[in-house]
Each structure stands twice: as C-alpha cells, then as structure tokens.
Image (cartoon, rainbow over all chains, first blue to last red; front, side, top):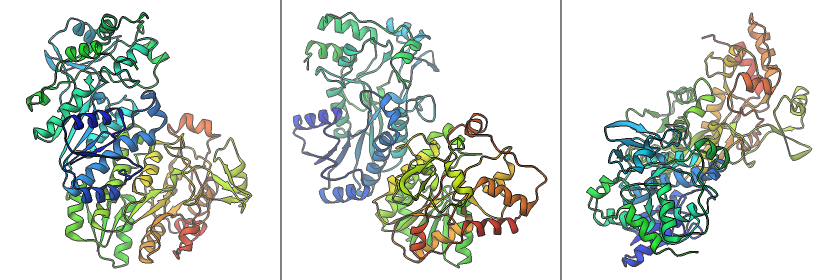
Length: 315
Length: 315
C-alpha cells in the first residue's frame, strides 16, 4: 500500500487518479484525520499501517501566485521545508522509502553547450537565450541534478517560495531513501487556475521567457515509474523533454483554441516587475537525461502541449 | 549522562562550565565527530549512548550582529529552525527529554498592567514605555509564555533571525518532551564581543531602549534547574527578573568602570536604523513568573548587573 499526502492538491489529485488507473492500492491522509505535520503522529501512523512507499504532494504554493509567499513566510516555510524534513525523518525512522514533489523553480536561466559553465539569464533585456530558443538551437542545455540551485537562499535574489523549496532538498538529503521529483510549471488539458495554459490565457499581458514545463499526468506517471522501476534514489528533474518559449505557447493556443482575444506581451522585465510581480520569477530550462537514463518514458514537450490543446476542456 | 550540543558557543561553554561545577556527567558533541544535524546520525548516537537529557545550545546568531542573518538566510534557517526540529524528532524517537536555547527576541515592546491587552512599542519616537521605565513603574508587564510572539514571520516586521527562532518554537511544539528556554541579551563579568556590557561600551553610539536581559551563568543555572527540579516541560522565559533601560546600563558602566569615553545616544529610531542597523531590532520586557513559580531561583537584574560590573574582567 502507498500512502499519499496532499491528495487534495493540484498535483496530489493527479497522483490519486494515476494510482487508481494503475490499480495500485493506496490511501490518502488528510491533516484533519491525522496531523501528519507532527513527527510522532506521522511515525505512529507509518508504524501502524506500514505503507511500502510514501508520496508527499503537499506543499504551499501561494495564491494566486508566489507573491503571496512573501507575505506568509511562516506558512511557506512550514509547508515547503519543515514538513518535508518531518516526513524524511519519520520515513527514515520507520524504514520506508518515499518521494517528494520538489520544484525546478530553484534555477534561473539555462546553460550554453559550447561552454557548460556559462549560464545565461532568462531576461528579456539579455536576449541571448531567447534568440537561441526561437531558433530551436541545440546549444541550449538545461540544468541537471548536479548543478547547484542558482535561484535559492544560497544564491540570491530568489523568491521566498523558491528559497524554501531549495532548502527542502537540503533538509532531506542524506536521510533514509527518497526520490526528489522536480516539477516545473504544470499544465494539461483541464482548464484550471493552476494550469499554465489557463494562466497564459488569463493574464492581462504575457511574460515572454523560456521554460521547461511538466504535463501533470505525464509528471505523476514518471514519478511513480521511478519507484516501480526501482530507479536509484535521489533527485530527478521531471519535465517533458525540451523547452518552450511563452511566445510559442501563445501561438499554439491561438492555433488550437482560436480565442477571441489578442495577446499582448510585457515590453521587458522592468515593466513586468514594476506592474505585475513583486518577487523575482524563476524561468529555466531543465535537463531530464537522468530520468530518461533510468528507463522512464515521457513524451516531448511539443507533443504534450499539442495534445493538451487538442483535447482542451474549458472549465 | 547529559549530551551537550553547541558546547563551543557563547552559551554552550557556560553550560559546560556549570555542568562541571555541578559534577554532572556530560559529553559534548562536535559536528566534526558526529554530524548531529543529520537525523539518522543523531538518532544512532542517542540510541548508542542513551543520554538522560540533551541540551541544544547550538544556533546561528550572525556576526557581528543579526544584520548578517539577512544575508545568510539558508544558514540562519538551518541553524535556528531545521536543527532544532531535527533534535526534537531524534529525541522523540529515542524517548529522551531535551532542552532548547530559544530567544526572547521574538517579542517587541511590553504590556501595560492597566490593560494587559495594550501592548506598547519600544520606540524612542513613542516614549510611553521609556517614561514608565525611567520611573520604574509597576505598570510595565513583560510578555509571558502564553503571549504569541509579536516579532516573528507571523507578525511582521521582524528580523530574519527572530523569524527563524520563533518558527523553531513552533517546529518543536507538541513533540516529545522538551524545555524551551528563552534567553534574552546575554551579559556577565567577562568582557567578550557577545557580552551586552562589552557591546554597549564599544558601540559608536548607544541605542536607548527597555529590555529584560540574561546573566549568562544565571541563565544556564536556571535552565539546568528546570530539569533538575523536573519542572513541567514547556516554554520558560529565562531572564533576570525585571528590566533595564540602556541609559541605566550606561550609568552603571560609568559608575563602576569609569571609562574615559563619553557615551552618546542615537537621537531617535530613525537615525539608528538609517545609520547603524539594516534589520529591525527586538527590544522587549519578559515576564519570568512561570520560571519562579516552578521553584527556580534567579537574582534580580539590578543585582546581576552590579555584580558583573564590580567583578568586570577586561579581555
């Protein structure tokens, strides 16, 4: 039996759906039933029910966006750093392997293949990455699991949200047996305020940048596959291979959904941060070679994007 | 046997000295020998050595002052929040009671006895508390252990340091058996850059405010007494009863140490924060009734202050 924490969240509900589809026995736990944020209560639960694996899909993302995390630092730390550490400790004490939904938002920019050490910024005022991305250059390399986060409390500036996510990876490293699955900008065919494709359609103006992104069902399938395949424990970037520019996403939305509105873009970073955002945003390209090398199959970002728009289900 | 963590720090070394004086068997652990920040390593150690009690005197204070914590958010969180949570979990799993050195700096200001709900700010531009303090008014009440912190991530503004200390109290609440000992501005007769009396003498200008303060040896004695007396587990404010104004501390320094220099004060909060400090400072009055009611004896702040100055040992 698998224990699923955070089953009512945007990613948690996708885990529940996929576990049902696979006919994998699982139970979800709400904080109201058992306060799993309390180490002793969680450990008691693990010792009683002996799940074979634990999934942590709980976290604090901030509503309507990460700016809210700047105002609720305690809630952000409790949900994104202290809770994962608690689960790591309880699972280690109970001898149970587990997986944690982390985030790729602990990086900013990308690397260039001619010199992997040159990191390029994802900033409209520094268009190098955007020019390469528009030409689908093979020179763009994503961050891999060995690269130290460069959008974190140890490499500022960062958003408070990203800081707490990066710190959770440190807090659970070297304890017990865990997968750290890095999600990055979830999207799929179901219109939802957490869905990237819905957000792009609802923004007053669109912010142009380059990102790897994760189809929600593809993400949870890949995560579960790391466990089913008994891939080595550790960190895995879990996005659809490749990257997209926001401009391309808008073009695909226009092509498939034919919205009445015209899309406008922020002129530059300065205008975006002055008018639309309080805390810096992470935009980055991820390298999923490690995931693929572990034998996990996940379709490319272009196929996942088109499929989502072809099967689009308005709310 | 007692296990002492952080024995090389300013408070840790006072614990070691007092345990030696009491001929209480103890061992200290450095991170180099055993990385006690790792849950599994700490739990293994506890299971092997079975200490009867654990003291955590480790923490991250920022050098030369709390402004440094704003620049090292990861280090501050790891030292002041994640470590205490790790110790709480390991002690709970091993069934060992423990004590944590917390801080009174999670409060700001004081309360007025005529209406306990009226909190007064400790701000030179709002002199109510200062006027009462100079007249040694009985109306000044300190914060007790039931009062919610009002200088924390949940009640901003606060310094990053104070935020992490307040959060540590939440992170360890309701787990196992623990004492939370709140220290507040340590001082004693030994000239040291961490000693409040040394700091006051070395500041270019002095910042006038009202504070409860903790004589270092008195503090560790009181902490150890809560355990020796088997006081109920929980939070205890551990300062010398009473409060001092900085102006009074300066007068006592002038009276006993007769320094050559003349002391100057910052004109107001605005000048202090513009020229001498980056992040807000906590200045507050603490209520130690709970500690005294538990049977712990600790001399009043005036006696501790005079004694320190009479026995002053320059560095």
